[in-house]
Length: 309
Image (cartoon, rainbow, N blue to C red; front, side, top):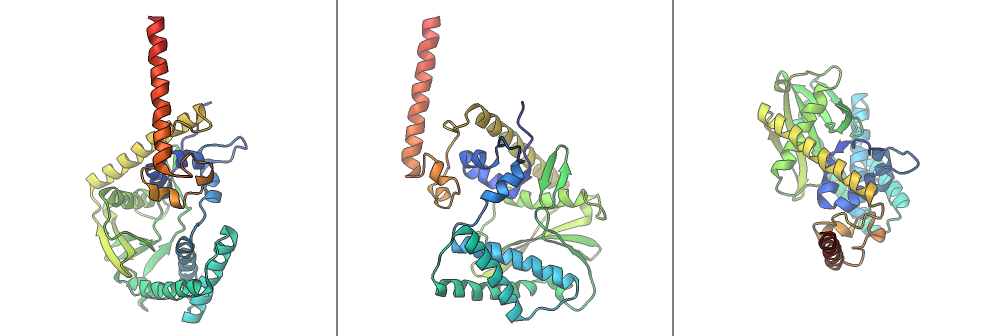
C-alpha cells in the first residue's frame, strides 16, 4: 500500500526542514486510519508560556475579527478577559506552569500588541468607520491542489483600491525574512484563487505581511508576479516530494532509526517527540551514533558484495 499524499502547510514544511524525523513521527499514518493532518493537530501543542501566549493571541484575534464582522465592539477590559481565558485553557491542557507575575506580564503585553495591531496601515480600511469589503479566514481552511490539500489561508482579505489585499499576521517573527518564506506568503494567492467568490487571476491580488518583531508591528508587501507564483508552486512540489520520500522511509523503518535528525539543537528544545527520540539527551551524540551505524551498515553491505563477487 502506498502512503497517502501529504498535505502542505507552513507548519508541516517548517518541521520537515527543521527535523525530518520529527516530521515523520508527527505526520505518518497510524493503523487507526487517522489522516496525517488531524493526527498532527493533537501533537502541535504549546510547550512554553511564550508559545501558549502566541496561540492565545491568534485565537483572541480571530474572536475579535468575528465580532467586528458582526459590528460588535470590544473594550480593553473585554479584550484582556478573552486573552486570559484562551491562555488559561492552553496552559491547562498543555500542563504549562509559570509564575503568576509572568502570566500577568504576558497578558498585559498581549493586550497592547492586539490594540496596536488594529492601528496598522493594512488594517485601517477594516477598523476605520469607512465601509469596506473584507473577509476573515481560519488557517485550517484548505484549498484543493490536485490531490493535495493546501493550507495557506490568509488571516484577512481586504478589497482596497480595486484589488484584494491578502493579509497574513505573524505574532512572532524574526527581524529578517528568507526568500523561501516570501514564496510561502505567495501561496495565499494560490489558495485564494481556488475559493469561490474571489478572483481567479493573480494580478487581482496584493499580499501584505504584518509581523511582530522587536516589540513593534512591521508591515511589508510581497510582490505578486507570474515568476513568483511559479516559484512558490515549485516550492510546494519540492516539499511534497520530500514528504512522500519521508513517508516511504518511515513505512520501511517504523522505528525511524535511519531518518535524519534535527539540523540544530534549538529545534529539540520544545520538540513534542523528544522523549522518544535518540537525541533526547543531546543532538550531537545522537547524530554521531547514527552516523556510526550508517558506516557499519555500509561496510557490511560492501563485505557482502565482495563475497558474492
